[in-house]
Length: 239
Image 1 (cartoon, helix red, strand yellow):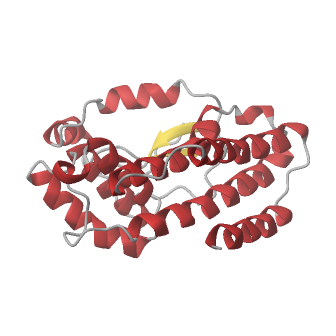
Image 2 (cartoon, one colour):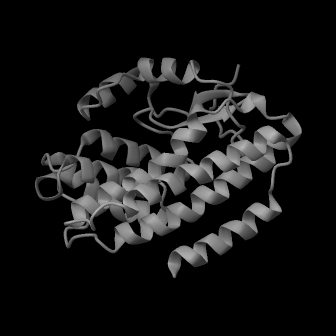
Image 3 (cartoon, helix red, strand yellow):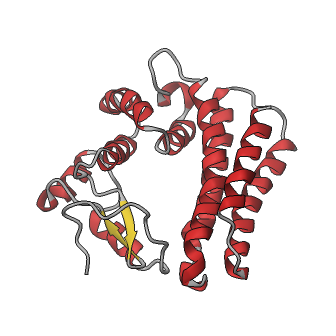
């Protein structure tokens, strides 16, 4: 029933923001197909044997459309159609995210987050990937639990750092670990940093395996990206 309701919401949203160029239409179709493929494949599997397995499957749904969008060259879509394509693919992801997040939150253990020793590393990380797309109140509620578990080795420090940065950016504050980027002028750029001189040290303390320099180089090598709808915050470095 929930899936049917969310599909109806998605169809209504995409009808208001439907791209018209062949390239825009193809992108939206690819995002939808990525979710359909995962759902069809998972439907052929035996039911999950435990919550950890359920979380991993939810994580696949969370990541499938994002893999399509991240690899896509937005410069292939006519400039007049990019906003419509961005809104349409975003509506599809938002509907899926809502459904996936709701299912995940219903599985939260009494501790408030999923300890690695009980759920396993893949499930705990998948849960983080899902909840980082949650609303602000949920992020504020989860972050202290995630940070506490990271402090005792029951969660990845990298996940706690990413959630901390996500919340900071959402609240209009500088990020500490340099994990969050936005698109301006067709290029991915990091949101303002709390302390750029020490960002690598902060990342190291959280056990982040990729340096800030490496993640910047990765984003610099990506194809042109769609403009982030919100205006750049104070302190953004734009060239």
